[in-house]
Image 1 (cartoon, helix red, strand yellow):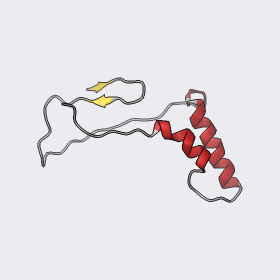
Image 2 (tube, rainbow, N blue to C red):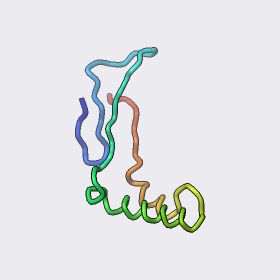
Image 3 (spheres, one colour):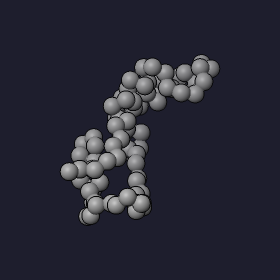
Length: 80
């Protein structure tokens, strides 16, 4: 079950996962259409496109990195 949270949803297992056991999770991610994407991420995409167009190569420019950083919080662990 996924407990909803505005920024950091948590996967809650019905039982503990023992060492050596496998867990398979399917994650569907994304915001949908362009207007549904948060403003900061849209700005980061435009900055990266501008950098690529200028020949700066792949990767995040520092300002785009700062805009994307709040959306990168990924946790894998246990509770309790």
